[in-house]
Image 1 (tube, rainbow, N blue to C red):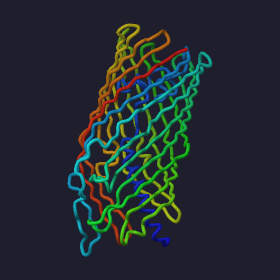
Image 2 (image 1 turned 90 degrees about the horizontal axis):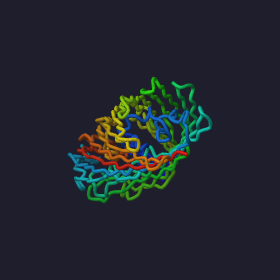
Image 3 (image 1 turned 30 degrees about the vertical axis):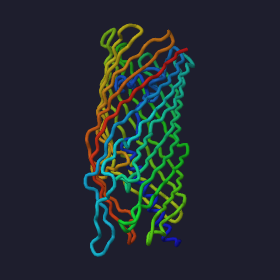
Length: 436
């Protein structure tokens, strides 16, 4: 294969990564990092105390009276539908091109996979004022899966993003009114992505493109504070930095025939993506002996995910991303039925950062409302059981994406992807908190 043809082939294959990462940014953040928080729609975690709140605020463990261990698991069940709304493919047939429907199965039910999200945290008291913590989470995970006959196949077949985040924390109680915390986050990411590739004749079978990317441990930081304005009112604020990830990928393109056969390739490439920063502000107000009101607002810096940089031997690509920063708001209530039982409820509005023009089938996302109920039971003097159920309603939205396959070559083929998306999800959460 000539160098120029090899560059074209690798560029075509790595375009799979560009499309997938673009879509993954829409909804790959999983906020299920606290079972207690899930029961009130995460409205109070940045202002609450204990190991269970470490993801939301590193200051949450300052001045603890006892050591704590938290463990939780969240079962996510998703019901989604993605339907074709007139998608077309234009092949380079002289004189004006040949435009045909993409064909395939026009409806895809359940492309967003169900999943299990675990999390763990430990807080250790060094003194009346100083504590250290360690937490492990899976904050950026997502899988969508379409069959090989789906109308989405030229945009997406399989998309699998997995992360592991380990965070070390130091927290200090300055005085009775102010707690401070700082943490360092180590995060590992890998991805598996695939799509179909059209041959020049609609009578020929599709080719395929796949990429498996293994990341390294990349690092970020987080800071937080809690201001105890009175025994009844706590205000919390925190900031978690973006993390720039570097993935080492292996690309395979196969099944291309005729003039496209030279683009079949098996080679290595690299990609760089950046996860968003997160800023949280919230409050907990104990209205009376039984009732505590919670409220929070979170600003998520999806604009940090501004481009995907892909490099390989002899060349590379840069793909601009049109994501916008979003603001999530939530409100909730805790009600102490008695000293051994607390009930919770909450609601949250969480908008999508994906653009209306350019949304893909890899993560078919929309604005969402989250409704939650939960409870905590005192099993023993030093052991608490948390449980929660959340229902997430996704707004109906559109897939609207135009991209050029084999860009920059005489074989350039235009995909005009249009679809309708709808869905909902149920999250069942349970966890334990042990103090010692």
